[in-house]
Image (tube, rainbow, N blue to C red; front, side):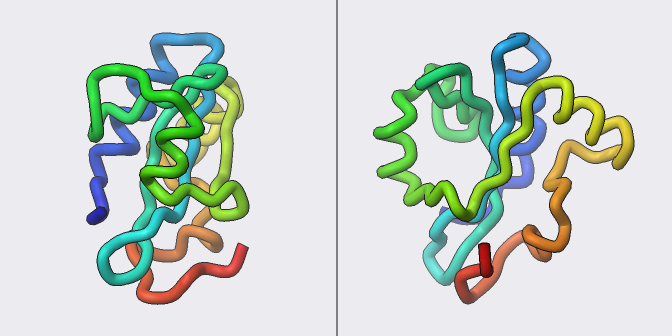
Amino acid sequence: MHFKEQSFAAAMEICSESELAEVVHAWVPADEGWVIHAWAEIEDAVYDLTESEHPMHKADYYQRMGVRPDLTRRYGRVEYFTLMAETGSMGPFDTKFFFANQASSLPQA
C-alpha cells in the first residue's frame, strides 16, 4: 500500500452521513515500511472509499490491510467533528503518534 491522502476525506464523508460512524486513523503496512490511512466504521462494517464503494467486513479488512489495533486512533462522530473544527484538518489529529505520512520503521504505540 502507498499513502492515500484522500482516505481522510473519504472517512469524513462516511462520518458525515451516519450518526453511528467512527473514524479510524492508523499506521498500516506498506511496501517499504508503514503509511497512515483513514477509514470509517459502523458496527462490524468498514467503509474505505479508497478501496471500495461497498462496506467490507471489519475482520476481513483488518486482516487484508494488516491493521493492528495498537497502531490506531478511533474517534466517535462528535469527537471527530470537534477535532476537525479545532484543527482545521480531517486528520490525523494525534500528530505525535502520526509524525509523518510514512515511516520506514514501526511507530511506537
